Length: 183
Ligand SMILES: [Zn+2]
Image (tube, rainbow, N blue to C red; front, side, top):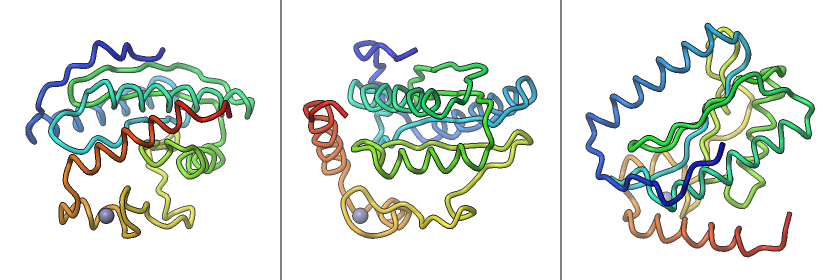
């Protein structure tokens, strides 16, 4: 299930390709919803800059998939179907899970908030009918920026931080997480 880190594509991705990849992801999500009719986890990682599939982002992705699977197993929720896509536009994971959607979303938010790498993960949860559960719907505040205390969307819109600053910070988080005592 984890992606091979050394197979990362490392190609520069321009906006049209990124937008097309979002459409393709949405189509895939809808197909899975039709096929499995369960809540769906769509997992991607934060990837600032034009290179979306790197060894760094694959490592962060693999940690996330592992943590998601551990959380699901610990909760007794069964994975009906799962797949990882090593795309040049960024790794994506899809997991159809037999679980109550709201509790599943809460558990995913808890992972994003409490795991040392959680801030680098985007864990979307869809209802069986296809509706995306938002943090706001569950009364969680929007996510903070990686580097400062502001709303992440503001810093992204204003490009408040350089890509290098963001990537360096991500490298540091990954290094700390991989060298911390076993959780
Ligand atoms: Zn910021």
